[in-house]
Image 1 (tube, rainbow, N blue to C red):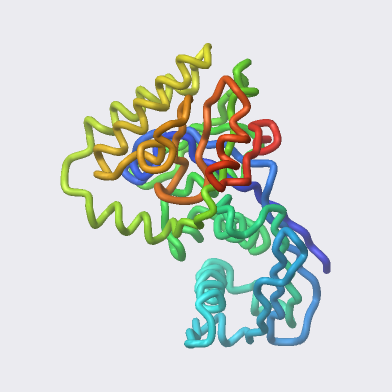
Image 2 (cartoon, rainbow, N blue to C red):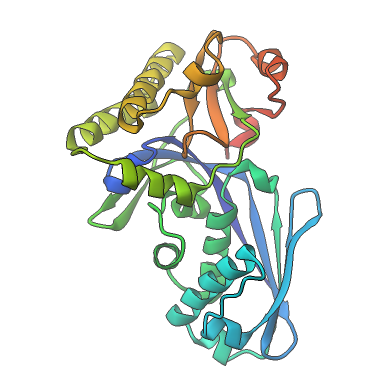
Length: 304
């Protein structure tokens, strides 16, 4: 009964936070992602093993079908409890996955280091949804929450425009193949950002009508997507950073960490962690290494 599923990771180029309120977001699925393998296991239980990209086990647990159907949460492990919650919501959407099976042995394997923030949770949720033959957006909404752009990336092999229309996810495949991608790099800030916590903070701090901000975001998003030159692309990203800095009342990442850099640096997704997009006419590797940031990935090594 062996079954195998795979989902792509994600990087959000424009629309961070505002995508939750209906703004259009430009996102890129990554070459990195996560596998899920399902095999026959011991009756009435799931033995779960999760591997990091280096082959090490980062989570291992066995839980019963009753744990899932009754959503039995313990103080044992927050990872276990999160997984139980996801599987419980999956069970509510498709009870047969438990009722029609004896047991499972489940293995997940990331193709990127878990701390990179490329979608450990979203790739898992999309893989589980494929396994259970349920709607991944509904499963996300019922468990983790969020806009769902990361689920859209998990399911697509090309750049996308994404927005919510009265809560319904709208996914549009787009072409993004400018000549200047050789001048684009992704740099990991060595700080994993908790997306769920960042979303909560955004809603807690939101104190104004964002209608005009969403209009401006959408305008910039199309400028980014349709930029013909490196300079046009860079200027649009700078405007986006300035807009979000004002909304979030936070310094941009360039202001806070890289004020002397000769180029553009843009936060991706949750501000304050994970990857940034770097636009540079020269290879910026030495600059970032001198600053202590050693994970610098050229565009074509990261993006599908």
